[in-house]
Length: 417
Image (cartoon, rainbow, N blue to C red; front, side, top):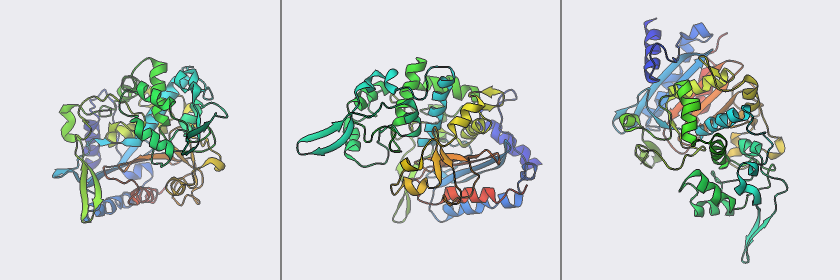
């Protein structure tokens, strides 16, 4: 009993709560159909990564039926600073679901239809071309067969590129320094570079969500950070989630590590990229920082079909739409990285969606959805089991160790009802 009450109080403190504000309730595992003995298997497995000098530190968090049953910290957040439950992490691509939620809030307000051409709202995209070839005579392009739609941006079939790929168009993105400026300036640069593929013909992980961030600004008339704060973070009491870390919270920011010949090394100090000051480029693709507790609240809102603790951001049918597969097998990725990663998966509006747990070789329920960030941050939501998993680390490259799969297995094996 005392352990449960203590965890409840810790969680309330982390999200900056008082008695009138949102809390993350904690429960004994047995109350929500899980075994305490079996859920405790998570800790030694994750601790082994620290003991073997594979990772500097991490946080794992598990909730079922809306109540937290596991919340543990391991190792260090930065050199000699112990990991804290309220450590602030760069969540990278876990920003994308937040941007997708913002877009769909505007969709519900009648601002657009999913199959509207993007150029209806972003005129710079009116004259986009599609890459054909490049040779000694120069760059060759063709006209798009159809316009890029907002749905294309949400499911990464826009023909845009720029995340983890290597092509002549990616090289053009790099030369253009797309992130050096505002979102509007990025749009202008993008409009002068051809698409890598015809819209709708390939899933290609890209800067599509960056364009969605600008779309939010156009449709709402507000900067992306202001929209996020006013419409998502403040209502959900996600007090530690933003595009930068205020100086009074800076001692909670973790460093980013990578493997080296003798173990691990720091590659990004906490204030790399001036994380402690407001940023000019508001990256809807990967610019947010957050905590495990904040992202648990966001995930619970999704699991609850758009509502958390009396605050509704989306209608239930909209969340169903977002977390359904929108891709055919023919356009699923077949490259050496995303192909195996998304085997047995579909893709929704910002999430991978589990379609076939046998083909995907992971434990889970059909319809579960998830995504991760490049520094080994991860969330996973199973609507059937009402299960949410969060992992927060700061270590690159992503998927270097099978931590996500282990966390899933260790969580599911603890279910006893």
